[in-house]
Length: 192
Image (cartoon, rainbow, N blue to C red):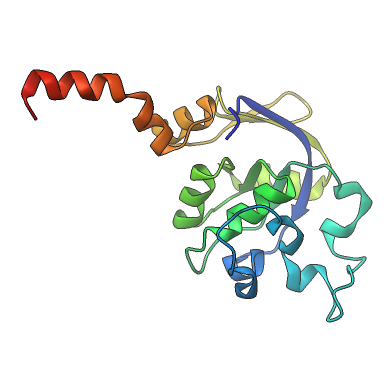
């Protein structure tokens, strides 16, 4: 996982509410244990027709969405099952952050563990983002702020340990491994 300090990108806006993990990554694509290639299945039932052809009116199929790393979603994104394949697909597609007024708990935790920054903002900020699709914004993880094009910074909460891991490009196991010397010293001191 690469360290994340800031993510500057145009936004893709998908204002639907209650986007569940089966809509993000349909169950038929859960047969893999690796992340690679899942981006092509992201929102598959909304993105493609029955023959597998891209639907021109779906936001991810529009040319202006290419290269965007920040997804602005409606309230309660990631509800439903706890499938980790949903954030895997988002990350494999190229998203680095998900912005909403509400992000389901398990999905939020899975995002944090997989290098995606979950950004919860207030209704007014979210409304502005929805009204301005493609706006270039910055997710500043060091400041814990979403910076809008006019320079206004909107703070967002993030758990301290998860923030540390994202800033340093390590997952929980990587963090524990980095503490090996301290663990050995403790064990030697205490005899445990």
